[in-house]
Amino acid sequence: MKRNLRVPSDLSILEFEIRKPSRSFFGKLSEVSSSTLNLEVVKIPDSENYVVFGYSFSKDLDKYIDSVKFMTSVPRNHIRKFRYWRDGKLVYMMALKSKCDFIQLAEENKVSILSPYVFDKGIRKYLVLGNTANLSRYRESVSEFYGESNVYSRPISFTEHLSMSLSKRVAFSVISDKLTTNEVEVLKHAFISGYFDYPKQITLDALASSLGLSKVTVDIHIRKAVRKILEEMLKVA
Image 1 (cartoon, one colour):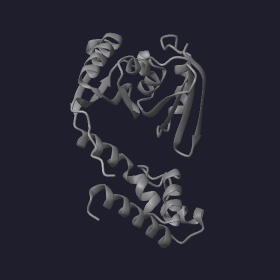
Image 2: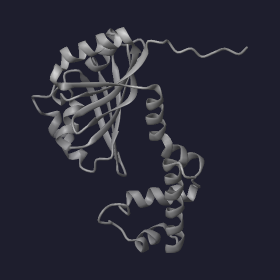
Image 3: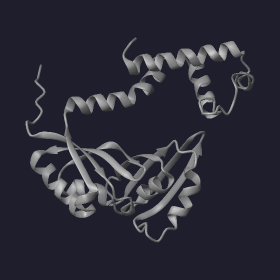
């Protein structure tokens, strides 16, 4: 049976920025390390606890974590457990929290935080979905909690949100659908080894030697992989 998809006429999306990192351990970590943290919060079923998953490409994040953990100005009383580990150039984080003010504000006002959200140099950036009345109440609650001068919001269209969401997933889609196994392995090894850093941390000759491949083969794999990704991102394929 064919059915029409009907989106409620008063359903909207707001983009938020909150400049109050001192209210969050992850926000403060992002601020002092001048890095971007990608985060997702999940409430554990049949529990009052929350799990925070996160990752960052910051190469110096490790050395800031312990110092922020012991800052007396940063509230950590809700974090029961916290661990992090590095895999190549990515730092992964996971925390167990007994309370999450950020999510609870959304729950109390019956709106939904669209995951993931980010802390960019201490600024929390995220999208919220809800009807007009609930979004208005949520905006007031956030302003009261974090301070009116620290909160910025703007409406965005569903088309804009879809475009933003899909563009962030393009590279992952290309990797899984279009890049060959060899291209992925060479590209990953090149990235971890610092081939794309400025200045380069490894030459093409050394990279090829570490992979046990010829210089020409490695160069071809990198060029083909990068071209496929750019073709999708720039829509010129």
